[in-house]
Image 1 (cartoon, rainbow, N blue to C red):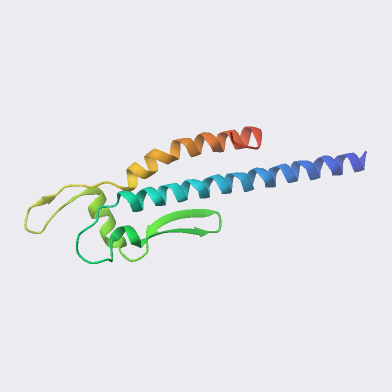
Image 2 (image 1 turned 60 degrees about the vertical axis):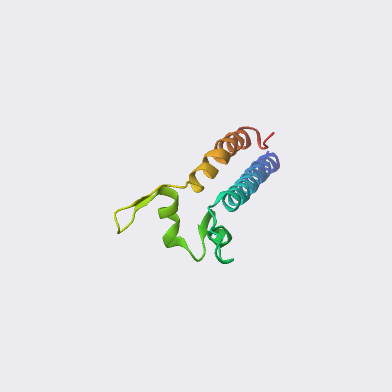
Length: 122
């Protein structure tokens, strides 16, 4: 009886580890898709080669994966949301982050639900 319980416990533990690994893989895939979208849709200027799009990176710290601008973080929200210049002129928003998340996150959430329920995504 103890051997059977040990076997069941090992199977449950392995299943849990497989689910977590599968979820991490799916989240990482979505982060890559969002990063690619941001780089493709980020506004670019004609001057120089140091574009905002080139500054975005994906970072994973522990269980958290995030996307950020490595060198131009102080500008991103201004471009994404628009701003009022000191001269009084309003600079319109040019969203590229939010649309990227909106495009890929719903499918990822569906896949995560599927992984939790069945152990794998379709």
